[in-house]
Length: 421
Ligand code: RNT
Ligand code: ZN
Image (cartoon, rainbow, N blue to C red; front, side, top):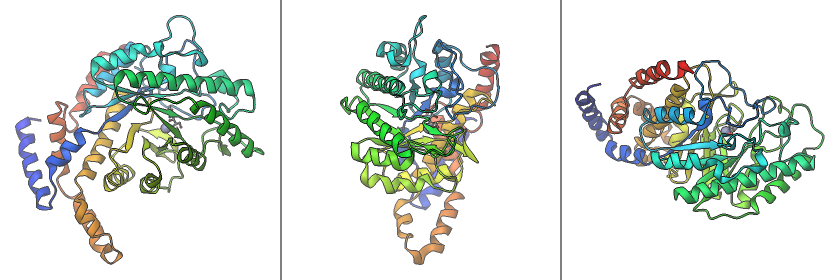
């Protein structure tokens, strides 16, 4: 798109929004400040760089599709991330998993990882002006094969995982110190049971004990923030998940931790958007794993669907942009993996922009029940405003291809780099 055409369309759109009392410049300026944490694991189908062949078996995570071109080395993954960032407007973060360390030639088990294994990442991030977040990897490991980690009744295995997560927090804190921005350490465990359990109480008591051991080590919140991620069920944990939403909500609120809400981790008719204003009065911050479940927690690439729009709208309406951390979490190996990153990130940013283009005062005025028809009509009419040119302006100002033009670059990269792997 010729930038002057883009600008012409934008000026028209700006006027249309201004008629409704919406300042598009203000919305664009706000959007510019919102970082998304891009999940490194989309680049290699949740593989990681450990020497041991990793299998997702028993973790409940399933990556489907066999498109060639997944990253096999840390260099390839970084190059792919750089290509993705070149097509995503704004300044964002990279979300690492412990299995993505650079471990050299000898195998380093999860209970022995150190900050030095992530030095390459911090140096790269610094050069690229990126900040990092971190996750413990409590799956894809023989000691997680029983389906239980931190809630394991087998004390040796449990201790192993406690040690792993402790080390992950230490690594995350050292990253946070280095980058002068808190590193968010998220904890998700696969623990649960395929069939009817008889000791839910025991598993949860054990998980509680493990978490308290882990978080007994204190770090400065300038360096490290901790979140815990619940789940409803997984493949292989259909009947019981130790770290359920109620469990972690209780834990986070009593221990000053952040809850992580993954869009795929609730009953399909449950609204994560609705949870924002229900949790924030009691908790300083929330982490969102933005994903798209199709029938189950299938981790499809994020699209600008009603769920994402509603979620973004609720964040903005709650004036909570500064209290909500946004991360992407999906894995799709059925198409170009760089494209998957870009499409998901751009869809979420679009949702945020749409939310920022909602006239807040007017919206609140229309909330009373007597105004239901007016309210719905107002929301419907907002959908008819020329949002596209405002989005394109955001892309152009960030020197990123507008519209679907980014696809050309993603496809060229696939031809030039990915298809040769
Ligand atoms: C699993 C959780 C978790 C993982 C990543 C890889 O259901 O969503 O966040 O996707 O840690
Ligand atoms: Zn998640």
